[in-house]
Length: 276
Image (cartoon, rainbow, N blue to C red; front, top):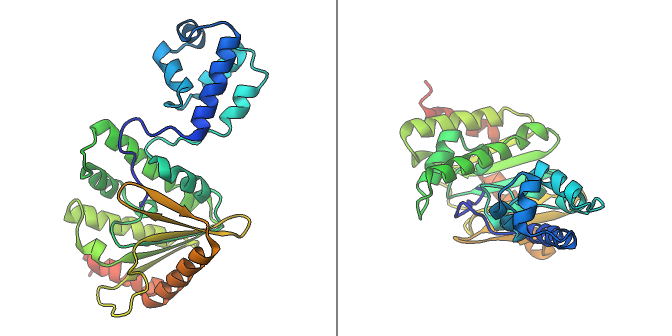
């Protein structure tokens, strides 16, 4: 599951702070205040201030106009290429989300909630609406939109191998409503029909289980390097230690042998959906 941004204003990233510092430097070089620069860019002064402080992702026209108005020698456009804020995603997850976009393989085991890349819109909305503290309607919509946007990876990267192992209990919980549960099963079955996607269900009764240490995600980079990602209540951890990543790869491989096959998983999901 992709973590949620816990407020409407996600944490600043290093790249946003850097861009803001560069913008401020060129503004001061031009002898302009934030209030003077803002109308030249077509934005309000608070927006300029938020960008300079690394609290807001600048839009493309903001960058282009600032580049022109401040005669920045292409520096602002160059700095903008490294911006990493993604609305709707928690700060700690952004680097992993970036890595997902270039992965050769992406493997996910979940025992808490349906993985974000497989959630239907209704399921994602139910998850976000139950968050504590309760988000605003606008925040829910932003998070749902971010989640659905990430799911395009399954179609846009047909050469990436996606593997998911999901606990059967997650389907029996009926998160949202029984109808939402049926809809997410249909959504997952459609995804599992893609040639590059394998979905396996871990049955309720499984005396030997290699995943008792909790959820995990594994990713193979374009350089054939494996990385791992794990989450806690309020943070996430990108693990690059070869020994620890190797252990998690071993655990995942064991779970693939313990879970139902993709074919048997499809049959189980169809039964859980209520198919005759």
